[in-house]
Length: 85
Image 1 (cartoon, rainbow, N blue to C red):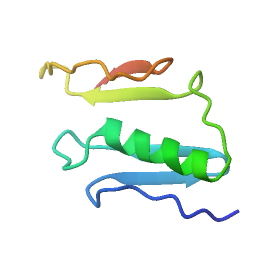
Image 2 (spheres, helix red, strand yellow):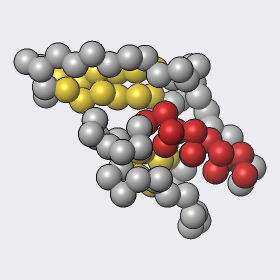
Image 3 (spheres, rainbow, N blue to C red):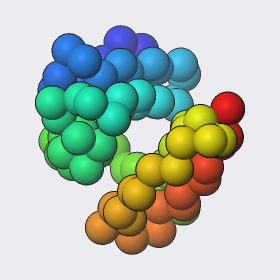
Image 4 (tube, one colour):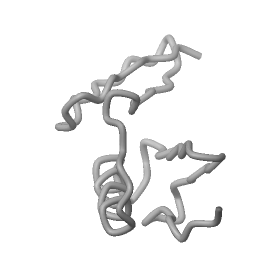
């Protein structure tokens, strides 16, 4: 199945495989994760598809010695994980 879903910013990356979609948003992107996620939710709604928020995760990659202050996203039921690299 082919879909027309895409990211808003060329700085961000979308990877699709079967029924999974991953959106990669760098910290210096011109469009933040919340705007990209809202765009995906609108696309899903327009295409009569459901997003399982229980299975939706935000994963923050950060360098261990570099602590970033990251404010929580106002998305209900979205799990945040941190990966130290």
